[in-house]
Image (cartoon, rainbow, N blue to C red):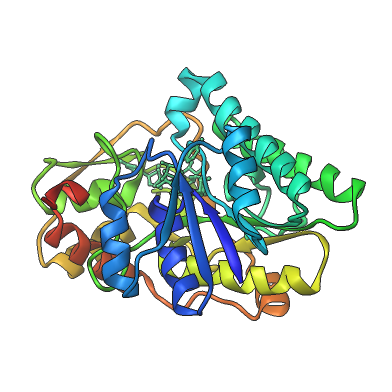
Length: 340
Ligand code: NAD
Ligand code: WQD
C-alpha cells in the first residue's frame, strides 16, 4: 500500500514507519519536526535499509496537503501528527485545539478532495477519563476528560464519527493507546523528549543515565497494590504492529472502528522503577511527593476486541520494554542530538 504517515518522525510514528516498510508498504512521512529531529530520518534509513520519502510541512497547511495528494495516489493515511503534553495543553489550549483538532479537520478535507477515505487516528486512553472499573472496554463512556489535550483527542474522535456517518466511503480506525514506552531493539530509535520529561519512563531512564538526580513518585496513597499509580505500559513496537493490523482491518470494514491498544496488565510506578533497575543494573533513587493533579489511580485496557477483530495482542513484557529503553538511553544519552 501507498501510505502517508503524518507525524512519522515522532516517537510512535517512526516505529510504525519501520514496521510498514518491513511489511513492503511504500511510505511518505509528513512532519513539521516541531517535536522531533531530522536525524530520525537517517536512523530510519539505517533500520529500514532504504530512505523513506519525506514532506516537510504542517498538517494544517491545506495547500501543501493538496499538492501532496495530487503528486501521488495514497491508499491510506496514518495520522500521528499533533501535540501531546498534558500540562502544556492547560497553559496553551488554543495551540492544542488548533494543531490537534484543526490539523485533523484540514487533513480530512484534503483526503476527501483527493478521494482518499482510509484513515487511522492516534487517540488515547485519556478519553475514558476516570473509568468506573477496570479493565477499560471500548464501549465505556468517553469525554469526561480533565485537560485540553485529552479533550482535543475526544473531539477528533467525535468529528471522525460524524464524518463516517455522512459518507459511507470513509473507513476509519480510532486507536486508543494506553502508555506507549520502549524503543526499537536496534537501539537506533526511541523516545527523545525535549527538556525535562513529563512521563514516567523517560524520566526514570534519564535518572538511570545520570542526567537527572532523583525520581519523584507522584503519590503513594492511591487505592492500588502498593499505593502508587497503575498504568498499562505497552512496547512501542507492539503498538506499531497494531497499526498495521488496524490498517488491514479497515480495508475490510468501512465506517468507524475503535480499538484499545494496550497490554491489558497494570503496573505500578514502583514496578516500573524496579524493572528499570533490573534492566540497567543501577539503583534508582526516588522520593514520594504529592499526587499530580488530574492523575487517575489506575488505567488498563480490555484487549479482547483488538484480539478478536485485529488478531493483534502485545507480545513484549515490562522487562523487555525497560531493556529496550535502557539500550536506547545508554547508547544515545542526549537522544538524537548525539549524532553529528
Ligand atoms: P511525538 O511528538 O513524538 O510525534 C508527533 C510528531 O508529529 C512529531 O514528529 C511532530 O514534529 C509532528 N507534528 C506535530 N504537529 C504537527 C503538525 N501540525 N504538522 C506536521 N507534523 C506535526 O508524539 P508521539 O508520542 O509519537 O505521539 C504520536 C501521536 O499519538 C500523537 O497524536 C499523540 O497525541 C498520540 N498519543 C501519544 C501517546 C504517548 O504517550 N506517546 C499516548 C496516546 C496518544
Ligand atoms: C504514569 C504514572 C504518574 C511521572 C500520559 C498522558 C496520556 C498519554 C500517556 C498521550 C502515573 C506517575 C509520572 C513522574 C510519577 N499521553 N509518574 N512520576 O499520566 O498515565 O499518561 O501519557 O496521549 O494522555 O496523560 O503517563 O508516564 O506521565 O505517568 O510518579 O515523574 O507515573 O502519576 O501514575 P500518564 P505518565
